[in-house]
Length: 311
Length: 268
Picture 1 (cartoon, rainbow over the protein chains, first blue to last red):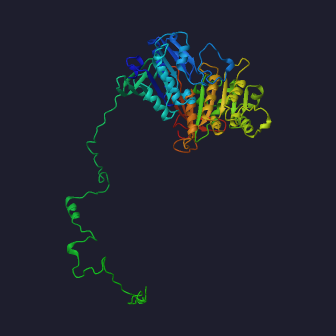
Picture 2: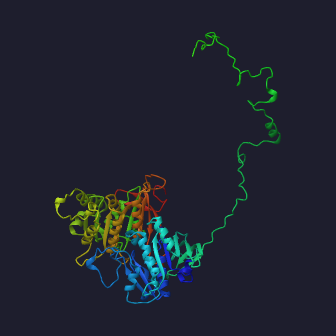
Picture 3: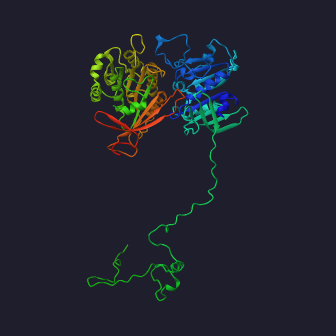
């Protein structure tokens, strides 16, 4: 599914690639950037976390317009600002469409790659970013009609709270969550690989969720395939055989048949048996009788010491 | 000195790390021996160092440096080492009064909630760059340490912006002249959300992560802990992905010896 979305066989207007500290999503974004530069007329790269050179290898550079949010996002370097390059300014709310409209070339449709949404989400609340993304997706409805065919954004899942992630997940037509994968057995070790969970919503309403394994070659082409999970039996058919405690001992704990029979006939003490009850002594006091033999020094008085109490 | 670690990381004093952001994190142990290592590596190689010290005074680094064979006082006089006394600045930020005139303290954000760490960044920039405002030769920015800024009350967002700008200054790409090393605490037994968040922010910026922690089996006299080296932000996919390496270490009087897990001299 990831490969189909990348190649365009599955249409997806907003793709969000969620990564974490353990598993970096930048190579996947790079693949999207280079693939979109081959497929679309123009790619707008908004890079906020890494310099643009990190995304240009293997791509058709003439079609990529980069918008720099990396060098000076907060305007701390006012005097060094190069006014020719288009810079993203985090001191004002993000306006992706505005940046696209400012570029001189008016190729359409355009694709947008954003690396990543995190610096924007740190400065502005989630709904502001969602609004900017929404405006980008509906660009075709505006008067000058720039059409945005696909938006790919990176998102660091472990830096933001669940509500932001949920809001973005609702907007996204494809959500790719990257996880650490096992080492690829076929390739020698070159390239990037890992597992991912892809949640894709088609326009028809069908939602597809797949666990996949992806591999990125040194030429920045991505291939993915569905990971087959081993089928577990629904019911544990046979119980595990109980371990036999009498096995593997240096002494014999087993019983022969006659011994087992004799054991079943043993009368345990303190159990009431009909024939054992003494008939001549019915229980006067419940719980048994007490027989007391006083010693010489005992002062055994038959009287009840409580007789003189008068309440 | 630290030869095994240098071999794994691919640097030594003749070939210092360039374009790298080395993040050192420690958990329940002290990872500052790696800060001293990078400091002495650069000074020995004759390269320029800017040390932003928030944790210790200059005397401390000097004493440890002498054991590792570098003369920090001399380097400071020559101009090779630029020392920013964060301890002093933070104390002054707390003890200065309004009558003392306009606040020139780089850490004035500790008193003024509206200020950011921009003055500190400007101070670092003046120390690190030459007249043209660019780096001259391999330069190292050492920050010891970032968690202290959080403890002093600076929000994670401001620390993250400061580190972003330092990174743009020192090592925006892997071909730049500068490098950055910083230490973040990541104690496993404390549920510190701010510290974990700061660590994650730094981890995304970093190219090499050295995680220093004690042994999971407890205290040992011969093995003091382990270092997990993780290479991040690998730009070149044709390189084999040896992302993680684990080493155990033992602290000695003038050196730290690193060895593969299980091969300590006491065991073999």
